[in-house]
Figure 1: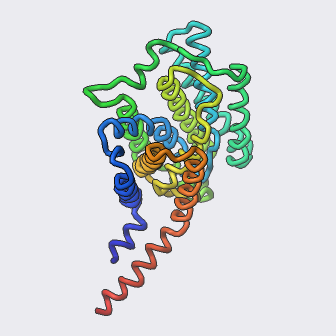
Figure 2 (figure 1 turned 90 degrees about the vertical axis):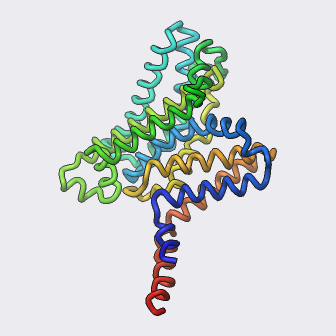
Figure 3 (figure 1 turned 120 degrees about the vertical axis):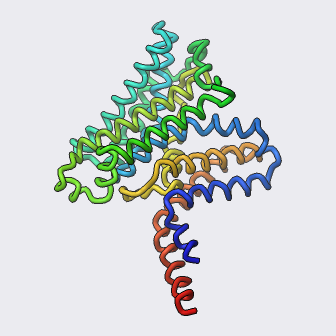
Length: 328
């Protein structure tokens, strides 16, 4: 039973076990879930959420929050479509400029919330509306179709039979894990989230590190925007609605504490897979969109509650059953 207590406090094992339990339960509801075709479909669906969740996790680790990834996805998809289809730029150049725009949007959030001393919740709640409004403005509210005949290859291509989106996920998560664990700035992100005052006194550039976290969040959201554009070969101001909630849910389900300073980027991937698997199961069972939104909301609520109660539950198991072992 001590193992049960440790399980509740585990950084990676808990989210992985939750994913496996969800997969088991869903496989009992429909025989279409574990088919190779559907599993490939899940790997494609999870890519946009999983990559955006990297940035959301890093921001949350600094004790901040980013509510704008969905709007960044919409704006970057529209800008990419305009650059390539309307302005005639080459696809590689259009993608590079789009990613730079994502960096700039993230930097805008970061400057306001760090140097401007406006709470990140307020800043990103405002830019959630601003960025999506700009997407509607530059497209006049209409989607742009048939961006490029080569754009879909970025999403639907494969390497040695492995779908490219899955390869993107593995690459970006590996880079993120190395960054957070093995670089000075990555360790500073954890330190700031754990104790900002102590981090400042120890010589860490708190504002600069928090700014970098938002820049990374903008960059990963822009990558998700490019992938979504490639998936549908279009750009639309309606893309990315609810993506910010799914990204935050992935981080929290993965065990990242909303208080900051605690979390694991690999566990975030398990959280993103859990969100994608649940959404896929709801689609397979023909659950209406309204109930899908309700379900995602409850998942976020349960995940946050578990984040708040995890140590208490784990400690209770350790105390009750640990003392029983000693007495015996």
